[in-house]
Image (tube, rainbow, N blue to C red; front, side, top):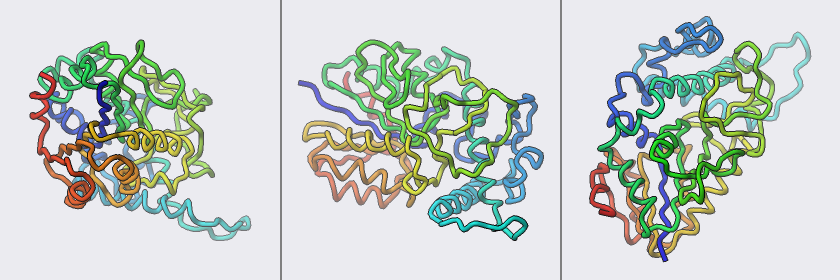
Length: 348
């Protein structure tokens, strides 16, 4: 009987993919504002999404295409922290004409989620369909997944990814590897898949069944951030540019528990359930996870319920020291790698 393999992927996985594919000049997933001036406004296809014209609240808070990655990260954290707290606040009724609280950060959140979905959809369009595998033919992660899928060593492979790009799915499709995208409609791709992909923070491929086709605009509204269940979403890898009433994305620094997104909670439960099934001979591979303060409760759900004898590997050139300490304290068979080259020697 084969083993269970569970992969937990963060932004570092996408960074490694982009760098190995030679796409780092076109695609920046570290500084999320750096390509904002180049990003087309979906309605007109004219560059300049990140501008005072289209995102006045983000702009007034200092979002600029030429800002450094540290400043961009700090601004993102401020916006999302305000949202994380705002959803906990009991909102009093405010009489018409009375002064209201400053809502610049909340409106900036709406702009940010629309911007991020458009940004990652645009990044996806920059790589011609069918060409990604050629760019990554020597990438250890791709070669390992191809071998793992066909190897009798593994009975099942669960990939829990906190990235909302679809590079992983595109690679599997190009290599004719069947997979199941958990919890959403039309999520089965191929016959009898060994691989299941779980995306607790959402995806640019998630489309709400009531998505609009009206003129594109930022979805400012009263519901923060707007709720839906997994059954409300379909999967579409063609990534149409229609307006989405509800963006199924948890932005960086977003606390999915506080935001009370039903779809995210449902998928998060599935992710934790899969990790809990890992036994003594099974494997857990963790790549590119930040273990940031807002992420820790989710990651802790994955790593505290399995067997202490699970074979655990972490791949990260710049690991979070707290996460390294936690894994050391939880698992007897924990091994750290600063890159994925060692995967080339697996399943040979």
